[in-house]
Image 1 (cartoon, rainbow, N blue to C red):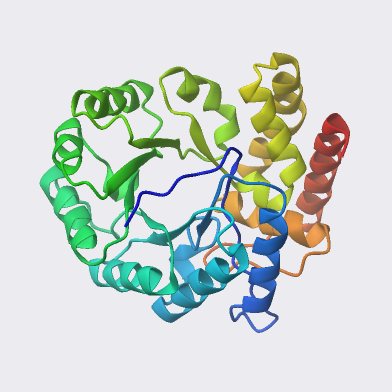
Image 2 (spheres, rainbow, N blue to C red):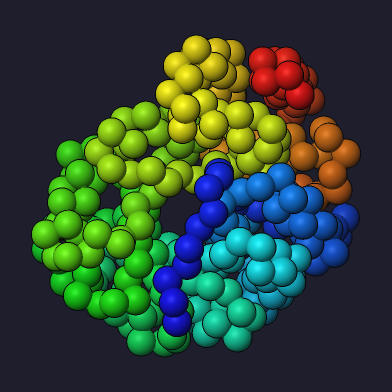
Length: 305
């Protein structure tokens, strides 16, 4: 299959909507995706971290990817999450191909930590399970080494590396390895939490793409920041970093899992019925919701939304 070609714009990581009984609400998920794609993202990453991949069964994952593909309707590429236990990862990647996804973001293995050769073998097993292009997520139990990257770059369906570790020197080494291997086409992504805070540094080493969970919650703010980066508008970047992103990160860091919980809460504040997060994540308190609402109001004021 051809490698995904992303449009210009923020990369969108949709939430997975749940109903009042805790089940997946496919209609609400589809509406959420459709409305946000209309706001102009560069691509959609379905059932990944923001979409609570960790909490989805194989059948739920397949349904979420399928409804996302239908909602996007070919406007931009759809990348599906896969990972965790190897058997689960293989089932997810096969389901993603059947649903019509354009590629896979390979999340880390579950619980155990293998040596570098084992991480490579895990990726190779997933590559063998479908014809989909694969983006490797360098984080947690899926940490890559220069030797592992050099091996995996020989596989033509490895089309990208997403960095969730934050070691800029190592990330730059991966970029150089791709150049030396004649893989100048390889896609590199900043996958740190609230990546807007670190994207200027990643951009400087040749990593132009980044995850934006904020886009799922408030696309006008996320798109304004992306445009400010593209245009080297330091004034707008700094205003948004100081008054929106840093306060959001301070709130996020108060409770484990708030990188997802706050996004869903922000959508609910805006009247979007996406439900609560699934355990072990928890929803914000009423006081935290008030602070989130104030942070969003300030971000909207800055961008004139």
